[in-house]
Length: 89
Image 1 (cartoon, rainbow, N blue to C red):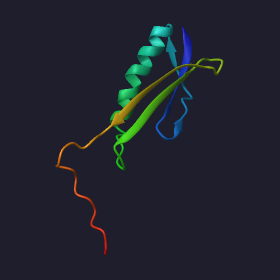
Image 2 (cartoon, rainbow, N blue to C red):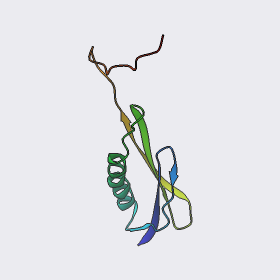
Image 3 (cartoon, rainbow, N blue to C red):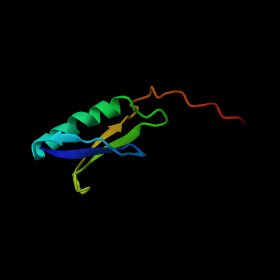
């Protein structure tokens, strides 16, 4: 099995120094697919309604071999928008 490194980008780059052994391309893809929601779950944006989470998978030779992105997008609908901050006149 080969070792792959799963770096994450959520506005900041987080490099994987340990890596994970994978059997092949399908295993790399599944590992990335499972990791993205786990990371996004703890990092839903507090200051807005949009955020992209990206995993970049590197091989042992430090070549990027796979990338995947999960996007969070929140949209207020209808007339029940959140109250806006009062502005000083």
